[in-house]
Length: 325
Image (cartoon, rainbow, N blue to C red):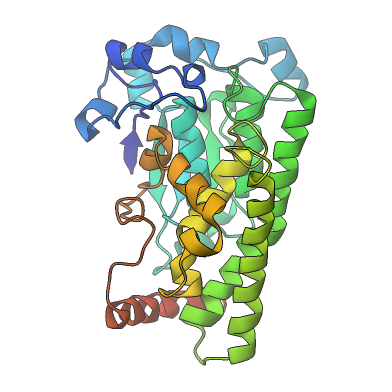
């Protein structure tokens, strides 16, 4: 188990908390550099910030059957994080960690072992009956469990985002962002995931399957390109869950489409969007949960040799095929 104090504010030192509250960074402002690991894990808490995060009143929460138990002791909070995130460093898992980082929420990480098929163990199925990651347990509300990455994003936006970092307060902008989130959940994620499978992991190479899903992935990138061609910096206008949901997938474009695929040439606006998001400290931090990711540092390019990539894929194939049993 790893207790993680997010750079957004919850477990920073007081100075770092007030240097970048989540709502103060506009789309065009220069973002500060990512604090060191030691700074991100500082035990100093900003109690007022934590108390103000939940915009729903206790009475309203009672109506929903939730129980709030916001502790007043800083030392107690450090020993009992508000959330536990069950995750792996995949595009779906990274959605949840980026959102938690954006909101500055204090959470503990449990890295699920796919190699051991841990996501199918009885204890985890009680949290997520579908046996997939990510899953989030909210300890401030009676250990309430949420599964499916899109549901986690909406849950955090609903109850822990008073500054509307994840979803705009404007109803039209909000539902456009939700539309893009559903687009990612039903389109980009499944289709690029299948491209990954047939291109990298399938026990036999099926040209039709590879071509089918790689072409559909490119078509979906073209949908993003069209939206960004309207003069937007982000998919739904303001930065939102729409961007968080798609970032991890598009980051791995060469893993899905091959090292000869050049996003900057095929979809220049999507490429600019990808690099724009990579300037956000929360995105950088969230991408390295639970393990360090080099994808941003490597400029979203595969830096290993074809032989190393094939070896990596074969190692993953063992647990991928095991998980499907």
